[in-house]
Length: 306
Image (cartoon, rainbow, N blue to C red; front, top):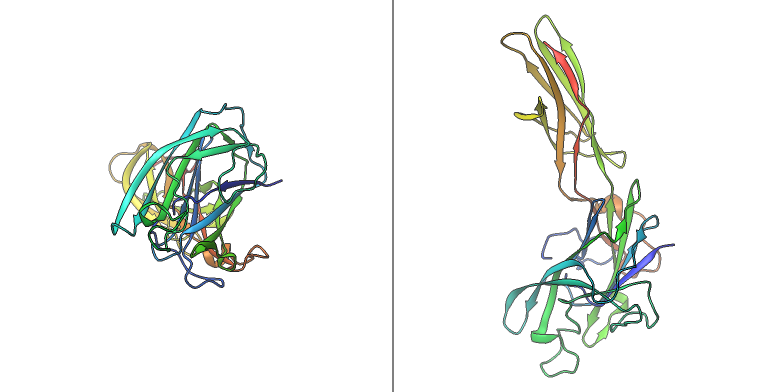
């Protein structure tokens, strides 16, 4: 069963995202980065987007959540940016992620007990596009641009690819705009890089080939570095549309035995065209953005005497 993290108006980043699938103005984005001990969730949108009334983040099946922390315990940190309409400046925010009683209910959340409730101190509630003095208006007319929070030793990460989803409903004046609700997705998986060799001993040439993939799919445009005896030697290549790369080296000097590995670090990528191909039914604005998580991968060693 999927778990829902209901966040009463998280901050949202002014990074560019593709606007597709039924809501031409929506630029919301969900990003996930994880390790065996920590998990980072980031939600973002452009300054031109309406203030979010609610964001529901769906934890994929396969994750387990440690709910043993007692209320008042710090389990992580959070940061974000809001834009003050009143002062016409962006304002950075930071704070802690604190466990609160599971019966705690923030405005816009389900009025029922949860398995866990975490308080992000930088949350800003209320619409920003209503006149000064309007009850419930966000402080300083603050509009959320981005919010990132990391929790430590809370999630147990499953093997394979996971798909996180967020459903965002914006404000329209002083009321939530259900018709403007959109979906964003984040695909999370480890990546891999392979390395193979073809040796031309008489010419002392070695052709290295390999492939970069994530969840079995090719990753194009990835920069691959060749490590010689565990150190970077300045030999690099870029993967093509099929995720493949090649590097040719010529050995000079006396004959020696060396080890070779391929290493790649891939940043978060926009995969909206494929990741939003089958949007969740019932979301009026459809799926507007999908990301693939960043990763670093190193191949197995190859030993060559040449």
